[in-house]
Length: 306
Image (cartoon, rainbow, N blue to C red; front, side, top):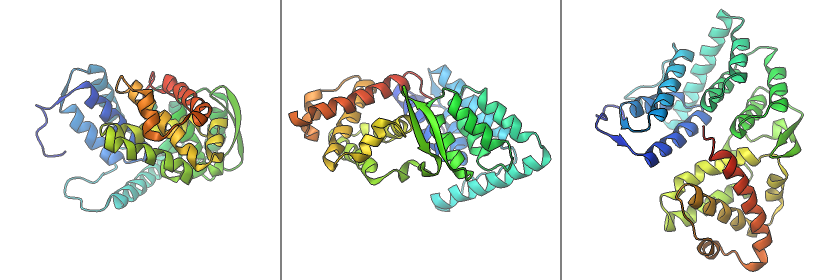
C-alpha cells in the first residue's frame, strides 16, 4: 500500500468493517509494523465513518507514543513474514527492557493503563508489552484481574496467553458466559492456529463451502471464528466440541456460516445451509445447541466490536 496515492480512495461501510477485522488480526498477532502502515493508509483515504477515522488516529498516536524508538521495517524489506514477526518481537523486547531500566514504575503504569482502558485494541497492545517485562507484580496483578473482572472475551483470552508466555502455570477459575469454569493456564493455545485439530477442521469446512457459494464470506469466517474461540474457550460448549465425533464438525460449521449470513450479510436461508452441510433430522438437536451458542456469541460480540 505504501507509495500509492490514496487520497482519492473512498472506504465504504463494508470496506471499513473489513479493515477493522484486519487491524484486530494484526494486533492479535503482534505485527505492529504492519498495523502502523495499515493505519497510515486508512487515514489517507476518505470515509464517511468519522468514528472509525478517530479510532484509527487514536490507535496510531498510541502506537507511536508507546514505541517511539522502535524502527519497524520500511519499504524495500524483502524478508519473509516469519522473519518480520520475529524481528518485531525482538525489537519490542529490547525496547521494553530498555524502557523498564529507565523507569522502575513503567510496569505499574502499564498495568494501571490496562485495567482502566476500555479500548480493546489498546488493551491488546498493553498485554503484548506485559508479556515481555520482568517485574514481580505483573503475574499476580494479571491473575487477580482476569479472575475478578468482567471483560471482553478477546481480552480475557489474550490475558491467558500473556500469562502462559510469562511462564505462569496452574488452574485459574473464571466466569464465562454465565458459568464457572477451570482453565489450565499452560494449556492455553499460544495462537489461534494452535487449537486442536478438530477445532481447526470446523473453520476449514466453512471456508471450503463459502469459497464455492459465498466468496466474500471466507475472510469474515476466519476472523469471526477466532473471536468465537476466545469467547467459548474453556467453557462446557468448548469441551463438548472437543469430545464430539467428526460428523459434528458440520454442525458447528453450519452454525457459524448461518450466523455470519444473518449478522454480516443481512440474510441466510437455513434450509440451504442444512443442505450444504448435510444437516439431517437426526442431527437437529445437536445443531440447535451449537446454533444457540453461536447466537449468544453473536449477541455479545457483534454489538461491541473492538
